[in-house]
Amino acid sequence: MRYTIERRGFLGMSVALVSATAAYAATEGDGKRIVVIGATARTADDLIPQAIWRGYDVVAVARRPNRIRFGQHPRLHIVEADVYDQAALESALSGKGDEVVISVYGPVVDPTVEVPETDLMSQGTTNIINAMKKKGNTKLMVSSSMAVKRMQAAGYKPDTPKPTNVTAESGLWLYNLRGPYNDMLKMEELTKRSGLRYIVLRPGQLMVEPPRGGARISVDDEPVPNQRVIMYADFASWILDQVQSDAYVGKTVSVYSDTPMSAVEGTNFETAVNTLRARKAQTDADLAEKAKRAKGQ
Image 1 (cartoon, helix red, strand yellow):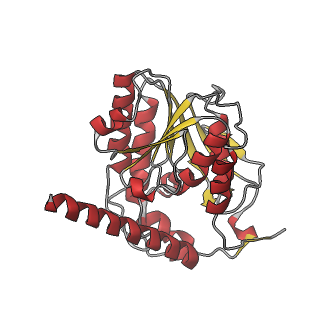
Image 2 (image 1 turned 60 degrees about the vertical axis):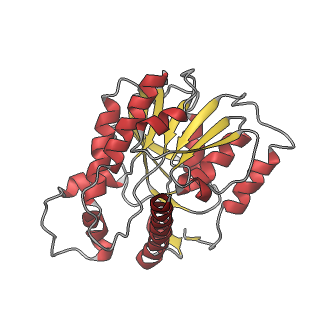
Image 3 (image 1 turned 30 degrees about the horizontal axis):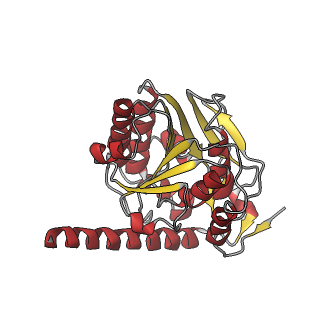
């Protein structure tokens, strides 16, 4: 069976979900607060409205709060903070220690070029962990990627010479992103040693489509299929199912579907690259403007 991608955003459905809470609110969350770090990340586009629909209070943390894709809502609280700034992260936490922290931020990159080594995920998560401990929070979910396991299998280290036998479609993307992926592995290990009640999340190839349900998981060292897709909406739903569950605490969980990338029409390497380049260009422009304003003050 093949699936056809309709090129539409999920934003309209997300906004509708937020608006729907005015008519009736789900009682699952019952006012419990979650903190979403990386509120401008694509995963957050589905995570935030679904959380509000379920009845949670949401603290949305982002270094570019103007890019958070939702308007005012009585259970949505926006905080400007950079993951490199521990004090700013602390300001997003109430001090009661009762929030569940969900980190979905990540690097914005162009996968057609080699991305330098980075400490964005490892240092940022270190600051999140330290902020949580200072404020008394105990449960953390961090988003990594199923690709880190493939990168490990390929043996790509920051100093690995560029392979001559791979193309853009057959694995060069994985090589070019070895810097961020190795940093994600460091983040995973830091999280496991944190002493917090953690879940490491490894999503498959995330796609912008309405939810299909049927999320599959592999836990810790269980086999993981290659190139499986998962809709952002389904990934967000699975994350929220864990907010009040301890079933996978202390585990690394790969989340994907039965659908392989090859079964989805309308997706290809060029389309994916163009989407990532556009997102990176917007991010770079926003940060340059922010730096310009700060310099002028």
